[in-house]
Length: 145
Image 1 (cartoon, one colour):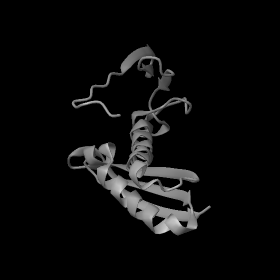
Image 2 (tube, rainbow, N blue to C red):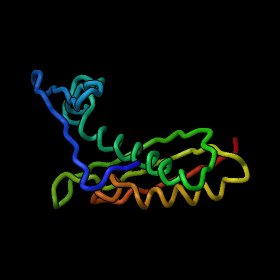
Image 3 (cartoon, rainbow, N blue to C red):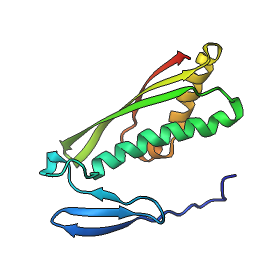
């Protein structure tokens, strides 16, 4: 059962050396952080803010769908998604100008249309998507199991 609002979240960042850091939050695994290669990052194993933003968006869409599906109970047999984003120089500074989410959702053949509609609803109510300056596009592929 969800807790009453407002919800509060905390993350700690610890500088390690150079441009590297570690992100932590309670008992969760520590995430190594650093700049992406596009900003002269040298360790591709580290999570950049740009990658974390996209990861948050892709996970939010899936979790929103799962939450909304508690009423519909559409069998979820598989979920694969890919996120892409574009960061550009604009007159306002560096801005993400596009987010694209590609989802393949697998369910029972007789629930495909319903699952697709619920996916559109999940996009509408995704907290991360609603917090972005640029609205994401969604390519949905709902397939039978």
